[in-house]
Length: 147
Image (cartoon, rainbow, N blue to C red):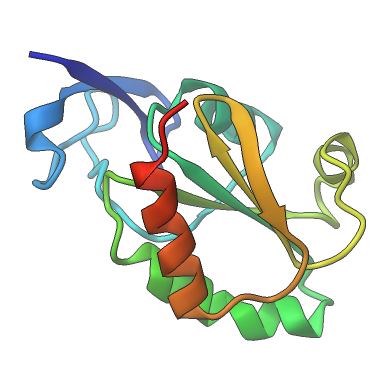
């Protein structure tokens, strides 16, 4: 029985879960909150690093600013797309006003920029607002992709 490492969206601790249970609600070993929470996670540097390097599921990262009109317009679509993926794809957000060093580290110089990571590696990115359908198709393609 193979295990999958999933970072908790609440406390950012790494959990090892059985692959067979990825469609049901699983609680974090540390904080006892749901690992299946689909709400996009606002991350600081440590949370971002944990999700990118420790998750064995794909991670979509929305680099945004609350001052960016296209970013704010896309936010509901990002949240709606995330709601379909539970333990299959993690959706996180980085506020570039609060964490400009993370954006700089990844060469983000247009907003919004969404970067896809899988197994700690950048897979691809878009530097424009995306619709819910586009985000969902992208997330689905990441699930199917192997390294």
